Length: 225
Image (cartoon, rainbow, N blue to C red; front, side, top):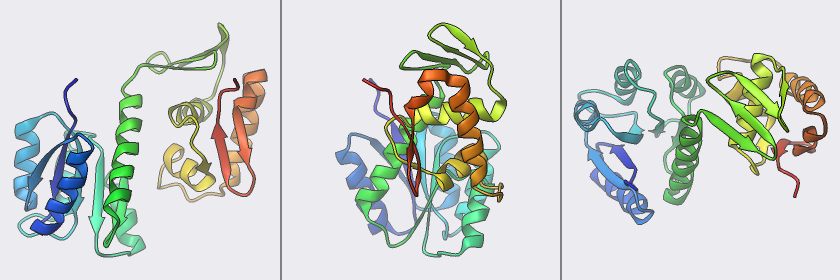
């Protein structure tokens, strides 16, 4: 199996080397760029980069410009690095299609963990069918079958179930679910998630028990043994 390529873009050579070394230890092929222009050229030259770790403040072309340029042609996962912790910057990043946002200074181990989580999620999303405990989701047909029986779900219920199955076994806060299923431009009440989960559980019958409530936090999707 080919190793996943990760492009690390930062004008600080020490930072690039640090991130490079940690990712390489995990078996990834790591490419480096020291400015935005080089990053864009390298991305379109390689064509098979699986993830971009992108610094905001760089010469020639900053991280926002790089993101805008790449998002015109690709939905490759992007982790944005910044020395700022300004909420406006963070919101701008999500509007531009940034998948994760990490403020400097950060732990390289945390960065690697976030990168691996995003890659797992993006790989799962490329699969047309998802299966878990007798539930089969066909994303291209937008259909769900539970133990062979068709279940009629709304668009949001379908997306919610897809997110749960993709993150099977992971404790998910209401905020995280809201951000990923309703997107970052939704600023409504997180209780809307509880309403949708209740409806989804009802339609899933006995399989609704797979969606566990984590009191005070959110939910976890676990298939009963």
